[in-house]
Image 1: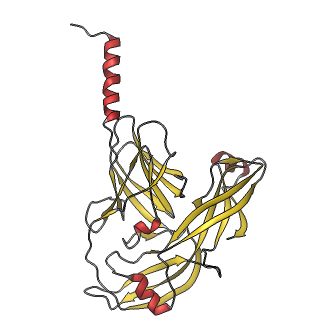
Image 2: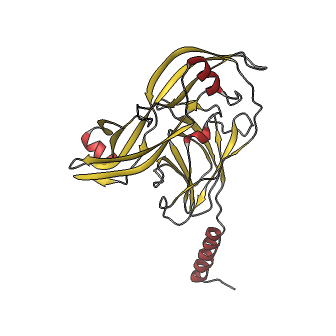
Image 3: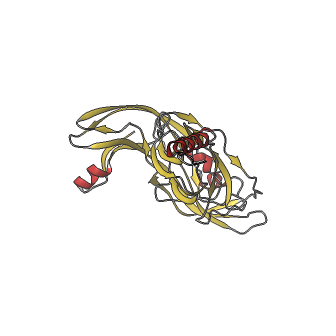
Length: 300
């Protein structure tokens, strides 16, 4: 018996609907190199995706896992992305804030090993609805495969201490000028390090040797009105300062000396993190004006 084209269309639609109904978020492995190899020394921390919501994680969730630092004081992380069901996609956001998923750094439907810098809050979502980035929730604790830790006794400074910028955080929705944008949000700035994940407490050893205190995290309550000029379209970002030192850990249990960098939030006299606001132009506006970013010399 022949099946009509309309019946085939109905059958196909029902199959797609069934796939969408059974779509499930995945656990996303974070890895240290582009192989995304699943060894305990390379890919050992997983982050949950939200189904229809973005689950948010702080940069400190990546601390102590041996990820390389980038030029913004964040981590270079390779995410092992699995295949998505038909009509669905994995989305990773960066520049996230407490009430904003952030900017999509990658949208994936095919399996891949994706390099994405983690400079501040990062969020994960599995979307099958065609809409994304509207609901933000704090993600559960990441699942970490245990790594045998070793203690080191001495830190020798090679460079520093020095100040450098951390990763920018999105603190407004997209806006077109002329406009005045009222910023009222919380931003958490954490510490970071490039020392091996096997080192038990690099910050403690560095702090004892240098006298620098590395706060695990500090939360700033931002309140500011930012003026957007006529003809500009984009969003407001806030970039924290980090206090860093680079050197060598020695006297380590059952291991050789190890080099690396340790960074923590740079605070002002009031105890809050020093930072600067900037306006990040949309790609179209940036192309027209021949630049990517317009920064304002205002520190908080």
